[in-house]
Amino acid sequence: MRRFGILLLVLALLLAGCGNTGEGSSSSSGSQSSSSSSSSQEEKNTQPFTLAAYPAYSFHPALSTSQANLTLAPLLYESLFTVDSTFTATPQLCQSYTVSEDGLTWTLQLRAGVTFSDGTPLTGEIVAQALQTAKDPASRYAKRLANVSGVSGSGDQVTITLTVPNGALPTLLDIPIALDSSSRPLGTGPYVLSEQNGKLYLNAREDWWQGADSLSIKQIPLATMTQKEQVGTAFNSGEVTLIDADITGSNELGYSGSYEVWEYNTTGLIYLGFQTAHGVCQKAEVRQAIAKAIDRSYVTDNVYARHATAATLPVHPDSALYDTELAQELEYDLSALKELGLEGKSLTLLVNIEDMAKSAAANRIEEDLESAGLRVTVERLAWEDYVKALERGQFDLYLAEVYLTADFDLTSLISPQGELNYGGWNDAAIPGLLDNVRRAQGEERVERMTTLLRYLNQNAPIAPICFREGTVLTQYDRVENLSPVQGNVFSNLSQWTVK
Image (cartoon, rainbow, N blue to C red; front, side, top):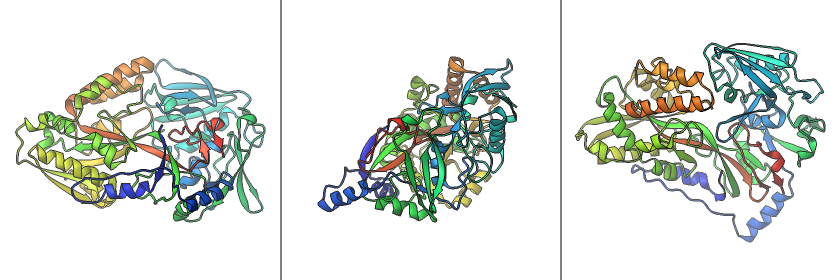
């Protein structure tokens, strides 16, 4: 993770999305040095460590639609497993587990001595009910649990039954466990949500099973928000100390002043899709050459202002599943495309006009492809029109983004029946290759993923570009030693220093 002071970064990202040449710009700077800024900073430091919350919305970790409330979830709730920055699962509420020979039944042994904040013991029945709630269509976890056919619990055990084997199931079970499905359910986490004199607080639990002594912050005030715009205003004024902000997102609010950025890996893959059923990109050698013609360093450094990690494979480079040798096969090289003799051939590239970063990336891709002799028309469409064009197959290329699950299951992108396989790639070998990866665990899974990735390199149904990074913003010089991960910006809270 990188940490640095930053000033008006979002303005730099906006500039990266403007202009027709695709030559974006980025800038960052340290803290402001003026006396007025120093005075303002001193005022901010007198404020307690404060987080934003939307009391009118649910706090349920699976059912809430408020991003600010969901950011608070790891302080209130814990999960069966945690997933770190390399997308490796570690048991948390789960003590151990066994897997049936066919890989379809997982039996999880729960950790002893864990209680919810009202003293209710953690049981298999409660965990099973929480996972059933997470499977509900209204839940943010419903899609990742689509292959779970049943969950049951008894005593200190939970049994999960799958429709298809998945050797990396623990990476999908970083789902916060809540006591019930109410809007403010209790959790087993280090804090409890409390209301005092009409104000909300997170109060440290003295009976937390991991030890209350490790919590340096005993009480966290929650600043009440009612509209989305208030979060930016509250953070800029210093009322709120920390926010989880997607500063490269198309709808993100601007932030000003002097603050720090703490980055974390995500599974958000930016990629170039191909029309494989007809047209210029029907041939694998053309798709492969175009994949090599993408200047990923330019996209990550200039378009995303280094808030992204370049990747030629559809697996995050920090994952054990990433193969560095295979990744080098599709490094930036325009010569392969020039050698195909495609001068004058026309291509249509679709991009969502509402996403300025992707629009800027499309500019650069257009520039590189045209330097190789192709004629590229970039169609910038509103979201609904963009999706309709994809569904109708009205493109040669399209720029898109998908949040993969932490097991890096590529089924939706490359399976013949994949819901995101807009390019119509239909390869009989893919279902078997995907199944081989899903079934395996440990080193065997790494080997089988390498086999799949090698096949994808040869056929290039999509061209991975980069993985976006998440960003936590904190008031300058207020918090030290953050090490956020996707889904939990408080992952090492016991190591924090709050000033």
